[in-house]
Image (cartoon, rainbow, N blue to C red):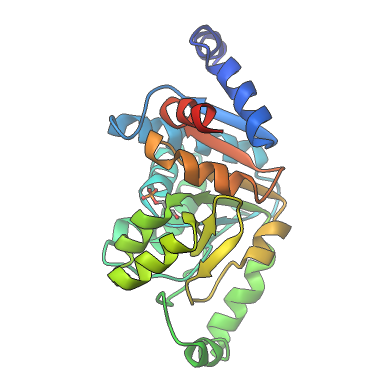
Length: 259
Ligand code: G3H
C-alpha cells in the first residue's frame, strides 16, 4: 500500500485530489487514474477505491445504505471477501426495480453484505408509483419496518449520474426528459434530479432515502467518474460539504476545467 501511495503522488493524483477538494468544497476526494468513459477497468478501480474507503468507516453495528447502478455494482464486486463484519447491516437505499438485476440496489446490497459477512434486507418496491400506492405500501409491516431501519443508516455509498442519461434509463417520456432539462436538471442520485446548484428539480416516487435523510447520514460517499459526469458531480457535491467523493482523473480534470 505504501508503494501505491508513492505512485499515486508521482502521478500527480494527490495534487489533483487537493485541488478538487478545494474547488468542490468537500471533505475528501479520492481519484483513480484514467477516464471511465474510455476504459471500463477504471470503473473497477473506482469500485475498489470506494470499497477500501468504505471499510475504513464501517464501525460496530454499522448500517450501510447503497444505491443501484453500474458504479455501485463495482463497489460490491471489488469489496474483499473478509466476512468479518457479522454485525453490519446493508440496505438498498431506495426502491426501484429495473430490468437489469445485477445493477439493482437490492442485488448490490445483498452482494456487499455477503462479502462483508454481514446481513441485508431487501426492498421490493418499484420506481415511479402513485402517491396512494406509496401510502398503502408503507402500511405493509415489512415495508414499514424497512423504512424505520433505514433511519439508522450511518454510511451511505451512492452513485451519481447525468440527469439526461438517467431519465432515459428510467424510460421517461421525451416530454418528461425535455421538462427536466428545461428546469436545469444536470444530475441524478438516489432518485432525485438536481440542477447545477444542487437544488432538487424532481424526485421519482418510491420508498426510501429522501433528501432530508441524505443530509442526516453520518458518512456519505458519492462515487462517479468519466468526463461526461463532471457537471453532475459538481451539482451533487454542493449538497453536502462533508461528503467523500470517489472519482477518476477524467472527471476530475473536466471539473477543474469548467468550475
Ligand atoms: O444515480 C446515478 C446512477 O446510480 C449512476 O449509474 O453508475 O450506472 O452510471 P451508473
